[in-house]
Image 1 (cartoon, rainbow, N blue to C red):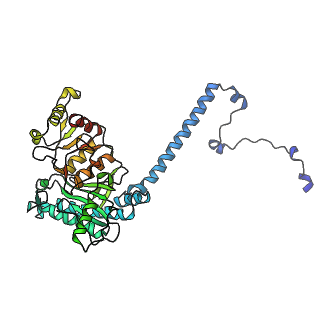
Image 2 (image 1 turned 30 degrees about the vertical axis):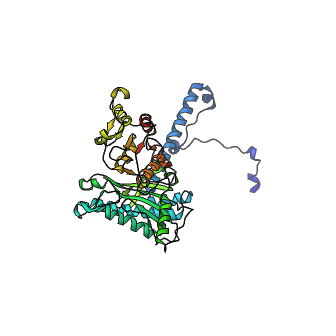
Length: 414
């Protein structure tokens, strides 16, 4: 039986059978070798192109499906200020102590933003009935904002000295136990606009403590004050970080640690600052100027000539510059940084050295502008190169697009 079926493989012959008709729709069409050989090169190229098109369509559909499947995982991803600070620390641009200081400032800004929004219904509008060291009338929110800032910085335990526009002298912080950073700030810039509901803001800068003095003389008030002044009066070029918080239609926290400028918008539902402006760069030029032209008569001749040139359409392609002036440094600065142009508060006959304070207004804002690719100048020199001789020292300020500031300096620089 077994021998009956034994045969060499090559000798087995099988009769070809026609395919089952029921399977015909599923079987590939057979092309005889003769017909394949008879195809023209053009036909073969057309067939290859069709195959390539089908392959590309399939790949595109697969990519779209993959993207669609991944979308939900990113929909709720939030890049918060807290996460950004952690990454800055990982990159070595700040240490843990400085991250705590910036977090404390952010908390203070949230509190102030809440008070600004409710000022009209919380009896926080109007004057406080006092004047600050500079002789300016204090608003109720000036006093409260200063307390909020000071309390948050003290509670952080990382600040050795704080200097505020609302305080006569820098204050040594006894509650510090690490870091000893020097923080300068204007708790509520543009507070005269509060009652009208116009933009206001907070400005801050952080310095390292001076290596030449130490805050170990708490028992000697005179020596302690000397150390505070020495720690505080540093040039803007020594800033470790600077920023501001804009209170307007939204609350925007802008900060730099020396490697670009980043903005975070407060999400009131989450209670966190969410990144909304990544690596901000000011335009090289911009046809917007922000000056208080009510002081035009008290300006020097060169500055008056500059102002008239901005209004001469023939010098600027048939269209003069546009004037935009809020009267709030933070609001005007923020617009200038985003849209380009120039902001200026020059000296005049009444304020012979300018009106803005170098330490906690001009230096931090110039540092931010330079990090965004702009320029900060007094009209004669770079703001960041000036070492303050006193805490409340005033200087002229011109900040904005580099070409615009250079154009101004061509009129007034001596």
